[in-house]
Image 1 (cartoon, rainbow, N blue to C red):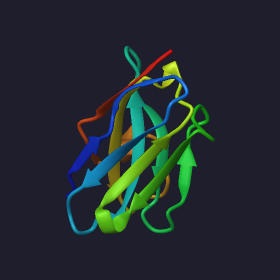
Image 2: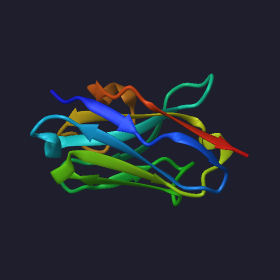
Image 3: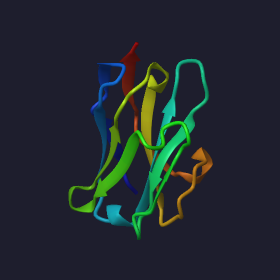
Length: 124
């Protein structure tokens, strides 16, 4: 099992940058594919980015491609989401999720473990 804790959210202005982190417990974190999802106010949870467990392959949603970067530091059991050129429409609760040794998938049903989320608010 793995427990996930997100941090780093906050209130920023449009055009600013922010990095959110997902810290995981457990000694086998390197065997988990980790995804970031977000849930804007009044909307469904949506895929943002994913990084795989083995090769570190990444996949991004079209709406954030070129602005966000996902990375991982297995020595620190942490996955990061660097968000640049933030827009008001990026306002959401950001969640990280993990699944054991899966490929880069974008659907919530494929992930077994979820964090509690961190709020990101972008003012225009």
